[in-house]
Length: 630
Ligand SMILES: [Zn+2]
Ligand SMILES: [Zn+2]
Image (cartoon, rainbow, N blue to C red; front, side, top):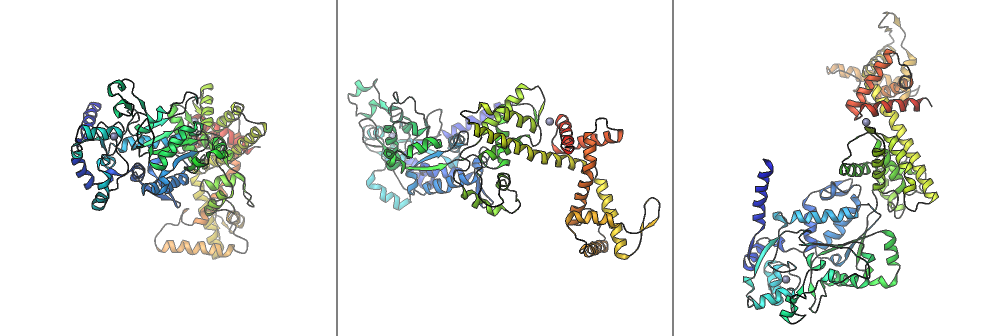
């Protein structure tokens, strides 16, 4: 069995990870590879970058976040480059608490979790290996054993920087047990684990009255205090607060701004000085990323209080807005739906329609001439629109403040989709079902005002309009493809006529064999589709013939795809001609055998090539029929 093989492999890996040695052995490892002794921020930075970085439209995209966070490229680039990269180089920014600020379900917790789970994996790999003094309750960096007086020399000789003091527990142990022969002190490799409380900590403020600082900094051990006689004996103290346990890694501070001030001041000292006060000991060194999160309202209240000024200057605040790209929003829903294990067909563009609604609710109006929310939405999603191009995106973004900091939460959408699925017994859900479910659920949104509700209803209507356009195109395309033959026929017919026009000859009717004058009306009806004017038609036709003969000389077939503009004209013409066929075919109540054949071909095509099931393909056809007959 495969699982048994994997278990054996796993045990081998565990054995490798259980490396133990003396400080002397460790020194050899560190000198050979100084990265082993890097500080927490540098380790996290290396972890992120080692997963891979690509540049998309001038913005860095990190593989590390790519499967879980969507539409946050610019935000993540700031986080990695301005915070982690600078902190990894030991610039001042590492002394700041990283505060993620943004709306609910906007990715703050996901981001923190990615870093935590990432470190758990990274420290199991060779490039992420971490070592600690064995038995140290804070699994501290073994280089702390090197006395301060010798550190400068060590730095000069090996280029390895040492920061921090031995913890009280290790200090005593080195003295009592090893008589200060530090080279004999045992060292072991450690693997970060939130579950085992190694290198990863989480603090969540409880009721302010019962908040205990011991949760952060540890506490006196009443079971051993009688034995050691003094509260200042480290053996009578438990270094098991979250700050102790998160040493070397990451400490998550949930809802930080809800915390009592005395907690915050401990953090202030830790971030600023790299140490904190616990029990009756000298300051305790700790090297960890402190990452906190909060929402915008709490943050605004916090900074408006002058009492918080000192702490405020110690924060590095990163706004995490909601995603503003429709295509990325669809990925968020797909991920949430996958997690919910919903076994039902979701019609093409169903999630897209919901995403259009969500993104519209998050965007802010631009003052630019000719720009509206729909255009802005398309532009943000990478599509050029009339009057604006991708290069205008940055300017549009900087035009308004706080864009994406409010609006519809992706969870609302997914909850509505889920409830629509549960209450109906259909096997397939389409865009209209989802938009209806979104509308029906608006009253459940907490503290929604009448104006807000009206706005959201309007966004649902806009999303519906956008969907209608897409639906029509979907069906027309399916019709045209099943009419590939007629596209080719139209193309050949046009060429015959152009040839006769330019050479002043006649066209032979394919059926009667009759000699006819070139069909001016037909040629013009095609040329007009791409704006060829009456004055320019002669030149256009001559150019086509020149192209045709040059193809013939090279022995190449001049076909439907050979001339870009002509192909466009043919398609447009076909689309226009098709409109009536589509209209009649899709809306007829009693299709004749010919129409039925056509309908079935279109449905087959929608299913086999465009991701529809038989339910949503039939519904789409019916819906588009009703749209075209309005
Ligand atoms: Zn220690
Ligand atoms: Zn379906």
